Length: 115
Length: 113
Image (tube, rainbow over all chains, first blue to last red; front, top):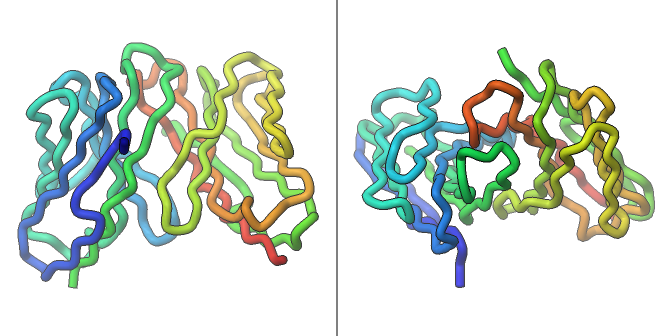
């Protein structure tokens, strides 16, 4: 069974479109994250949620809106896609955000290409 | 701001050679974690170091955490083609938002057969 899953795995779309990426974890973890990885492999955190509550909101354009319907799901909606949004988006989860020793488990990634 | 620096960015070695990547933080880290990302894959947790001066080994991999808890290293002895990938260090800094990991930029390792 996949611990952290994301859909879709690949997403090719035109500039200006709106798209969503979904993430689910079956680990029973309390905290979920979205990361963006650019072409140089730099991993940049975007958001984190703990039990459906927004905890981390980095400097991300407000075209990006996360939503957590329950603690096992964290979706990412992107409005008015731009060329610079092309990247790999990783979802991750960890057990408990109150501990600073928790490791993170990453999903397989969604490869977004904006044309 | 809080930063985790990692060098080198790229390393190309011949199979059998050793490899080391270094991680430095501008502030004290609560712990240091290492992740490996295979080409086309996702980051996978390797190990966590918590104590000052801690050294841990996983087969050919040796991980060290500095005495001041501001630096760390990963050393691979006698690299193999299966070691190819990007190695990331990451750590929460004292006082940072809990759950917030600061990732280094990673070291991309290429191993020639």
